[in-house]
Every structure is written in C-alpha cells, then in structure tokens.
Image (cartoon, rainbow, N blue to C red; front, side):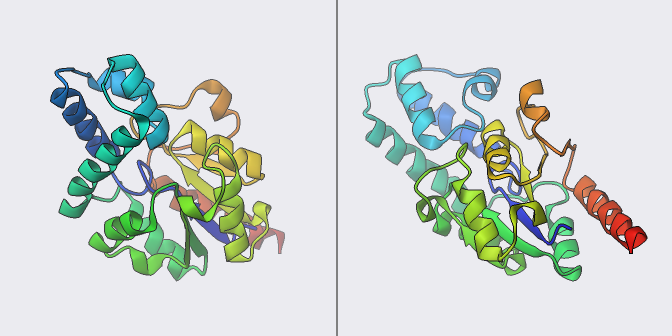
Length: 224
C-alpha cells in the first residue's frame, strides 16, 4: 500500500524549465552565442546544473570555468525564482488530496533548500510537505538513488510503500535504482522507451495521479 508520495521539484511540481531556458539564452547572449529551445530540450533538459555548465562551456566554447558558469547560472536563475514560479497543472489539487487522505508528502530534489522553499512558499505549497531532502543531504545526486532512499527513510516508509513523481530520465533512474515505483509526468522532454519501461506509468499531468491513487485505494478496499 502506498502511504508516502515523494515529489521532484523542477519541471514536475514547479514550472522552472521555462526559466532555465531563459537563463541559458541569457548566458549565451552574454557571449555572443545563440541556443534554440529544441537544442536546449535535446541536450540540457533534466540534467544537473554542473553537467549543463560543462556542456555549455564545451559545446559553445564559453571562456568560463565550471565553477564560474555554475555560479552565474545559480545567481541568474534565482532572479527568476524570486519573481515567482508557477506550480505545474494539477500540483495544488494533488497536494491537497494527499494531505486530506493521510499520505506523507516528501520533497526529493537536487535543489538547495532555500531555493525550494522560496518556490513553495511563493505558492503557499510548503504547508503540504512533511519533510524535505535536498542536494546537500546526500553524497550523490540523481540518477543515483540516494535522494529517494533518504526521503523514504525520513517518512519512515519502506521503498515499496512510496511513490515517486518525476519528469526526467535521471529521476526515473534514481527511483528505479531505489526500488521505488515511479510515475513520470514529462515536461519539455519525453522519456525514451528504455526509461518508460522503468516506470509504473507515464501520465500527462498531476491530475492523473489523483485518479491513479483513488484506483489503488479502491483495490485495497476490495481486498479487505
């Protein structure tokens, strides 16, 4: 029985990918370069900020170190975050449903805690979370399973009692490696067939997760 739902943040719970593309365009523009949305989605969506910094430097010949690029990206993106980041379709409805029905709700993100809280508080969504696992809480980021295993531990739940909600292939892999069922709700990039096979389902929006949980609850009642 599922008693804990673990949320990714970027591109799953909050609509941050649009901002990251704007940040990427700013970076390129400041060095006389250009990047299309298609190129961003193909090469950078769902990757860590460090991996993307390295790719930007290599592929666009930027005169920056990885550290300089990461710092620029973080500082610039926070300007967008502080202006407010909208939640994804169905996010608030799902969070309310989970709390009303006794689920534990954990955030499992590679983001920093202050950034995550800024986004959640800006949408009055922080109140729905029982706990948070962020990047500096674990040694390894996604696609390693550490974040989701830590989230299950904080919830006092077994992996099979949890459900991970993710939008990226790295997140799918992390949940799969943790032995936790995962539902993918893609944002800008659809998962490949290899990753789809590692999911419980691929859904169009977070609204669909409510119906999935209701069906699971009904199945449990039928067994009783």
